[in-house]
Figure 1 (cartoon, rainbow, N blue to C red):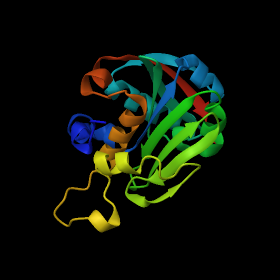
Figure 2: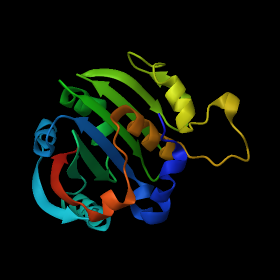
Figure 3: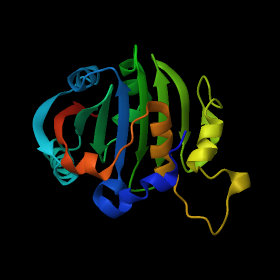
Figure 4: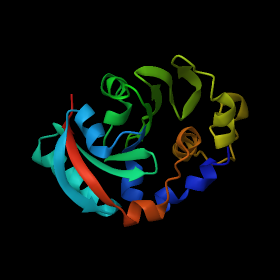
Length: 203
């Protein structure tokens, strides 16, 4: 257990447009097109790099009158990384829990209004969900199993909050996802990847 929020402070610096609103999801032992199929999606043209997938996400929202969500995917070891700029399907339980059948699903989200969510699902069971900005409130089948890891990653609990400490809830969510999956997201991964892309209906 080594990752902390400090390992992900680059997100706002390198990718400010993506950092404003995103959903990152990691799915174990399931190929990108299989993940897309579980979300009842269909394929879109591939895109290379973060700027291209952010542009494609906004373009699709406009083109579909906000009825479809753009999804960019790549394989990282045994995992599929799914990125939704300005999206949220990965943390939407009625979509994510069925899609997690037979696998591990780890997802975190933030939007431009500051709303955020973290979801860990295992074979359709919600193991843990919480708002990264308010980690004291947790739900799921095992809400306290990752408590030590959450402290290590840098989530600010009420009894630990400092007025002088930088608030890094989103970065801590990346670190906790790494703890659960072993996958470290890097600037190079986001910049250099040609993503398999798709879209799914927003319900």
